[in-house]
Picture 1 (spheres, one colour):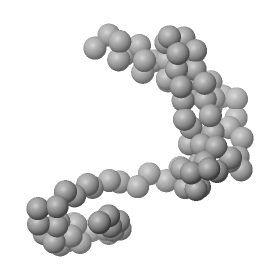
Picture 2: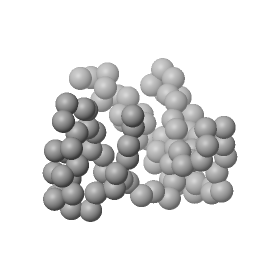
Picture 3: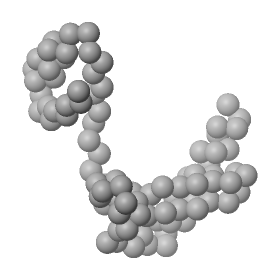
Picture 4: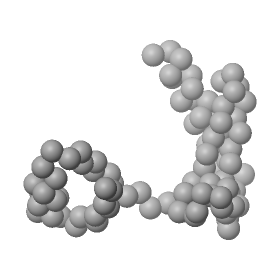
Amino acid sequence: MEECLSLANPEEFYRAYNETGQLVMMLQEEVKFDMYFRCYSIDQRHVRIMAYEPRHPYHLRYQTEWQAPKDILERVEQDVLTLNQFLVTT
């Protein structure tokens, strides 16, 4: 059984935690965003950036109402390449 709770303060967290007993509990912070991307990288040189809306039903997640500005896409591409380079060297 999966249940999602929105917790506003530490007391609510500890109450919910104490109710889980032996069940697994995952705590995750909500990140509010205006744009969200899925990125595929090939050979640490080629990056494919796709606008993505995770709040839509599965079959509509690649349909978005927004277009990312060119400078944002360039930054995302550079960050993907930087992350890939870091992962290779560690």
